[in-house]
Image (spheres, chains in turn green, purple):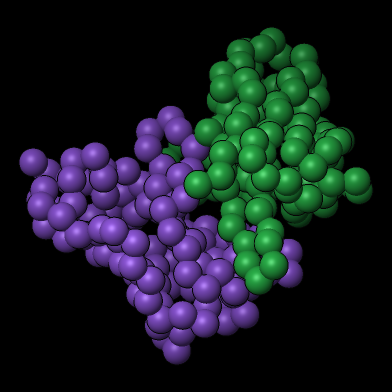
Length: 117
Length: 111
């Protein structure tokens, strides 16, 4: 299957700093990527839809100024957690939508674990 | 609103078949997915089925879809200890690409 990478896989930062997470589709182009957050022993919560060449669309309750998304190319989306606080500590997972004529599939990255001290 | 429901836990013996069930509410869903998540890892796509299909088989995996009852199941034949993980079903919209996930079913395989 197609591969989606995330970088970094682990990050520990001090409260108040900003952290950037990259999501790349390695062998296909993705005009749409998604960012999720997962708390321990829970399902995935969709945060936002990242659209190449346009602004991201955020789910209700997700602060757009807090979680900045940039979809700079057809293979790269970045999520920046600005002024991170301990409550932002979580597992962040991205997915990339692989579209073709007559179908689609969605592949996930390996996730980034963020710990804010 | 849209909702996806799964049972939370399933325990089977190695070599037995596992059946994980899922119900969804959005009749306009175009794609239904099964993902596997191992501890500390992302989601691995196992298989998916289009909403106009009833069944899909891929090696040890069989997906059954009952559109009338909005019921999806994943059968794993000859379950191995390496199959122990959390399994998520998700319904997807072809319009937006958004996925709605179930709570995940933890599959425990006993030797």
